[in-house]
Image (cartoon, rainbow, N blue to C red):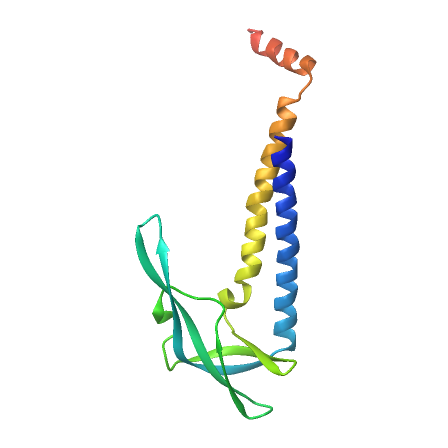
Length: 162
């Protein structure tokens, strides 16, 4: 039990650290990036298998083209977040984006909650679940290690009839 408690708490700490890193990366990216508008030009389609349903489904990653205002150059990027609903971003539709010059290239992302914040939410959500399991095991250890005196007094209280 103690091993599991320590393992889950250790994993939760790792997830929290990654969540903080992801949060700060996103904040700095939004702060330093240029806001613009891109156009969905295509999709990268990935086939996946749902073992519970026993069927295949598709995940659509929008490919967005945009123009860099400073250098008057066109760039294209694929969103890091896919969606199982193709209609989320229709081909030809305008989407708000952030782009940032990184060394000799540009990093860009769609300005949407899931595109920007999904990793952060995932890390903190995982930390909450894993940390909760660690706390559960910690409480279980505390309850099983109560002194014999406390267990005896608890039994006495249960045997008293008023």
